[in-house]
Length: 483
Figure 1 (cartoon, one colour):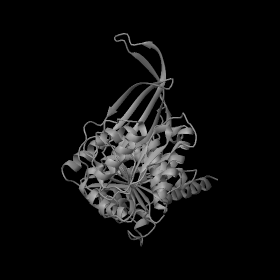
Figure 2 (tube, rainbow, N blue to C red):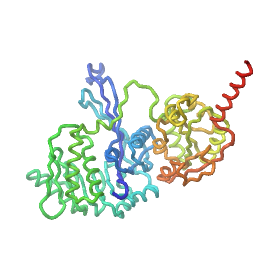
Figure 3 (tube, helix red, strand yellow):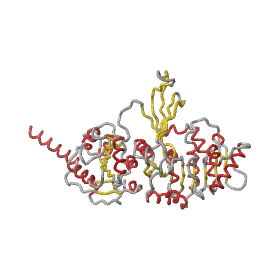
Figure 4 (cartoon, rainbow, N blue to C red):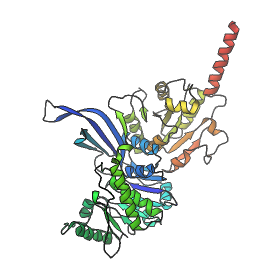
C-alpha cells in the first residue's frame, strides 16, 4: 500500500461502567449500581482507526476534538495505539457514550456532548495527507466531520479509493466513492425503502437505489451474522456469508468490516475480493469478543495519577481549569503556547525558557514528564523531585497558566489534545539545531494543525545535571574536609 490509511470522521469516547446491583434507590423505583470498574475506548471513527492500527498498518485519523478531558483521553488512547492524529477544532464538548452495566446487562446509556456543531477547518498538512493516502475510509457518525466543505473537496480530488461507511444523519458520499458500507438498517433509512418482499431482494433493490443516487461504484450491505450483500454492477448481487456463526460482542463490527475492505482495496484487491476479506475479518473480530481486548480498564476507586492529568496552581485535578484556559484564549483569537520537559530541580535556566515561551503568546501550558516518564529518560535515580511537587512549583510561576502531566515517553498524546499554536523547545535542543532536524520529533505532529515549532535561547551553564554534579562534588569536598 502506497501511503497511509486515512480514517476520516466523528470520534467519540465510549465508556462501559460495570458493577453490581443488589438494591433499589430509596426515593425512586430504580436500581443502584455499585461501580466496580470502567472501560474506556475510542468510538466512531476512532475505533475504526484503532482497529486498523492494531494490525500494524500506518493509520492517520482526521477528526474533530474539543478542548476537554474526553478529548485528552481519546488522544492518549489513540496515540498509544500508534494512530497519527490530525484533529480539527470542535466547538462545545467531545461526544461521549457511557453504558452503565450490571452482569453484562445494560441498564442505561448516558450520552454527553450535546447537539452537533460545525467543526473547524483542516490544516494544510491534513489536506496533503488526504492527497497522499493509500486509501480513505470515511467513518461517518452523523456529527458533521463528513460535511466539512474542504474535506469533501479533498475527498473528491483524491486518486485513492474512498470507502464510505454512512450514517442516516450524515451527508451523501462524494460522487465516485469506490464502496459504500451501510448496515441493513442504515440502508433502508438512507433510501426510504419500505423493505417489501424477501429480505435479500429488498436489500438488493435498496442497495442499487443508493448506489445510483450517490453515484458510487459499489455498495456492500452488512447483514450481521449472515455476512454481506455486494451490489457492484448491473447483474445479480454477490452474497458473502460469514465463515462461521459467532455470538460475541458486535460493537465495532461495522468499523472492522469497513477498515478491512479499505485496506484490501488499497492493496489492489477487486471489490468482490475486498468484501470477502472484510467479512472474514469482521467475523473473526466478533468471535474474539469484539472490542474487549482494545479497552483500558481502571478500578473504580483508583486515584493514582495515570495518563494525562492537568494541575492548576492550587494543585489537584485541573483538567477543567486547563480546558478553560484554552477555551478563553481561543475564543479571543489568542495564541496558545506550550513547552515540555522534566523540570527536575527548577533553576534559572528553566525560568528563562519559560519566560521566553510565555512572551510568544497569550498563555503557556507546560507538558511535564511524570515520575515514570522522567525515570525512563533520565535513569532510575531521577527525578529527584516528585511529579506533584514539580507541577506545583511550575504552576506557581506567573508565566505558567497550566501544567499537564503525561506518562508516556513523549508528549505526543497531550499535544494532540492541546493543539498549541506554538511548541517551544529550549535547553540542549537550541544548540545548533533547526526545526527540520530529527532531534525535534514533535515538528511533524505540530504542523498537522498548522502549528509552529520554535527554539528559544538557553542560559549556558544552567542545567539540572550540572546542579546535581556540583552538589555531589561539594558534598564530597565537605566529607573529605571532615576527615
